[in-house]
Amino acid sequence: MRLTAAIRATQRTPLMQVLKSAIATSAAWLLAGAVVPDGPAPVFAAIAALLVVQPSLNQSLSKAVERSVGVVAGVVVASLVGIVLGDAAWVVLVAIAAALILAWALRMTPGTANQVGISALLVIALGPSSPDYALDRVIETVIGAVIGVIVNVVLVPPVALAPARRAVDALGEELAATLERLADALSAPRARTELEELLLTARLLRPMHDAAVAAIEVASESLTLNPRGKGYRDELARLSGLVDRFGPIVTQVVGMTRAFYDHYDDEVSAEPAVQGISEQLRRAAHDVRRLLRRALAEPAAPPTESVPALTAPLSVAAPSGGRWILVGSLLEDLRRIHEALREEG
Figure 1: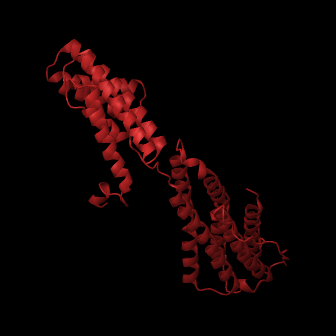
Figure 2: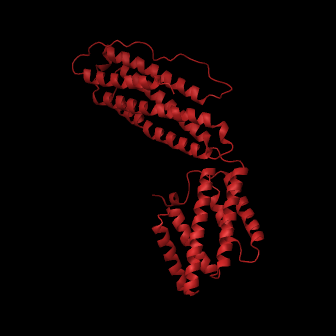
Figure 3: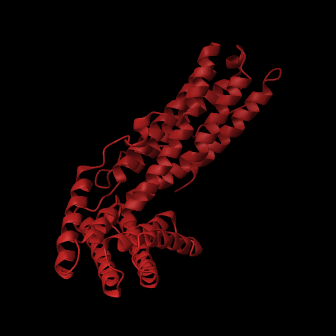
């Protein structure tokens, strides 16, 4: 593993996200300093605001709760330990250990548990062990968390629908192309290297489907509690439904490709049933693209309606030799693809 992979992301954080973090941190520092003027610098407020500004409003709210609960627990533990044991240097270690044990006993999340320990450390190390000091730090944290949420709401709440749209589009186009490639392979003899490439390419559909599902989840997360989300939820529902319909088709087309690879012989393309299956796969590719156009269309400009192509009946003659295994497998998978394309969303 490259060392830089541990510290560098695959892509930059949006500049707007950086600006919102800077604005929230500055505003929290200034406001907390005004609300709690007699005390140390409002470090707790600044840290809370910085951590709370997340890519989605739902994540921001979760971070705000996590940060606030962690600080309150850490401050309470540190204050009690400090009052009982004094302010010796070794008391810091006792406070941290007590905070972590409390977090473990309450089954807190790793993020909250770390926050409890960090807050206990800062309270003991930076200030006196008094109830007033502890209360001021809690107030600072709440101010920072609230400021972080407000800034994320007011300044262009993020909507991660475009990446989901691109992922679904890529999946649909590649699924249609894979169906067409398999149809071409069924229609004429192929070299072994071509069959291997066909199988490897088909298997790439699985990570593409997983990426589309992940992008849908991120988009859904970005719309939760988002005041801008109302105008995007219908499109997200269409994209999500389309990915759900594509999932079984991905499974079937990969299975068909593997069956063709395993049972291939140079004469298989001469079978009338195989030629019919090839034509049906091309029709299925047409219908996949049709569904994709409908899901990605703007409501104000719907696509020109087209008739599903997967409508022609398929007559199957008994295959020769042992090819009935391959033909039967392909037909069953084709039937399932047919059902997935016919299913109304």
